[in-house]
Amino acid sequence: MSTDPIKEAGRKAKGKRPYFLQDEQTEQLLSVVLAIAGELAVVRERLDTVERLLDKNGVLRREDIESFRPDAEQAQQRQLWHQEYIARILRILQQEREAISETARGEIALEAVVKEFTEK
Image 1 (cartoon, rainbow, N blue to C red):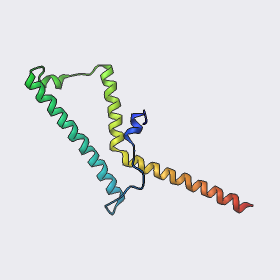
Image 2: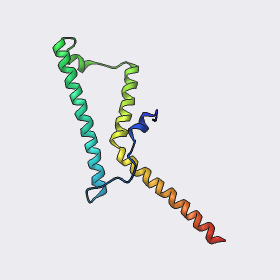
Image 3: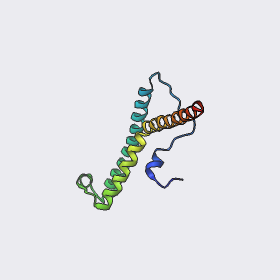
Image 4: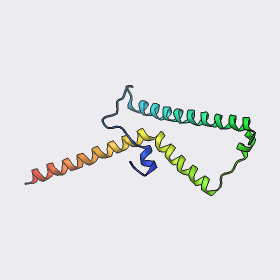
């Protein structure tokens, strides 16, 4: 398992990605939107849980959440989370970019082999 959380967030399944819509860019946009929607749904549920538990236990009020300011370590942890979050959301675009790059490297290698054999 990778220890780089950004790489982990961008993991992909083996094999070719199935596309269901006629336009690949529309499919990619849909994937990004659905990734954001999934992430937002989880965050909203967690936030609702925290607010309800805090209200029930009287430990803190919702206004306290609004006025909270993270310390340096907390801000750094949040920044890392944001990077991982964006990597997950934009995963499909990164994977397409990698596929194009791999194809280009393969074409360059093929061109070099053809050139080597045709020059002899």
